[in-house]
Amino acid sequence: MSHVVHQQGPAGSCVECDAGTFKTTSGPGACTPCATNSNSLSGSDVCDCNVGYRSAGGTCTTCESGKFKGANGNAACQDCGAGKYSTEGAAICADCHANSNSGVQSTSAEACTCNPGHTRENGATCGACIAGKYKGVPGNGPCVVCEAGKAASFPSMTVCVNCEAGKYAGDKGAVICADCEMGTYGPSAALSVCLRCAAGTYLTTTGAVLSSNCEACPAGTSSSLGSVFLDDCISICPAGFTVCFVSYMYFP
Image 1 (cartoon, rainbow, N blue to C red):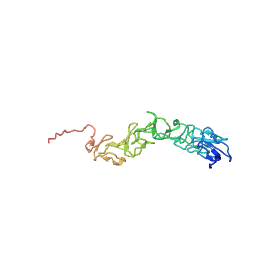
Image 2 (tube, helix red, strand yellow):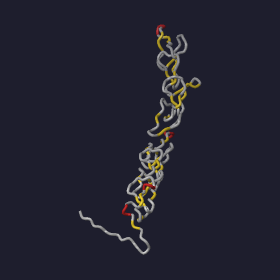
Image 3 (cartoon, rainbow, N blue to C red):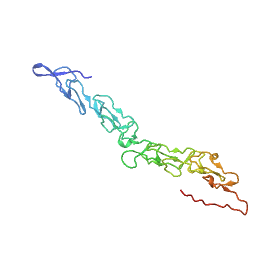
Image 4 (tube, rainbow, N blue to C red):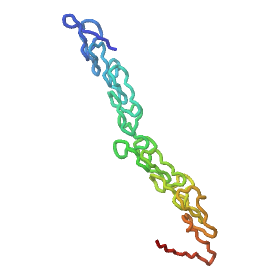
């Protein structure tokens, strides 16, 4: 802590040393200007290193990149924390841009890399992965398209979610998983295609999970794979016979 030291003034009076100067001893001597990159208050007996400078061997030296010093004094420079960076002589550390981060003691904005779920493909800042894509690791690389059987329903996703049983995603880059259609069922997760009901059965609902959800055709009838309606069950004809289909016309 500096204390007030006076210099000899006119007619023997003592006056404070001016700001930016100092005097360490008593007596009538003159005040000495502070060295480069340091300063003092009026009446000081020592000069303190400026903001962004540290004391090293009696001189004030610039804080290195990745460090900062926010107050006058001779204390050491401090490391910039994660998510921040600085260049030489910094009084404060700058924040990484939105949706990015950096390690401790980072030295430039280039050290800030995109968070998971974000990419720098389309500009200088990190943007969210669009729905249907994901990115699970930090860095500036591209977002990845979801595989078939999975979906990313929102932006900024870090994983694609498996379609649950009874649903499917037939194409890559799905935003939602669709219900298994009538005549099909989905017995497990992450399906890219639902299974068709067996011959001799039919299913009129969507989103079925079990093969037992497929209903058996009436006795003496059968149906093809993936049949939807009871009307799809047709008579099983013996050799030499075929089914006679009757067309109906309905009037309102």
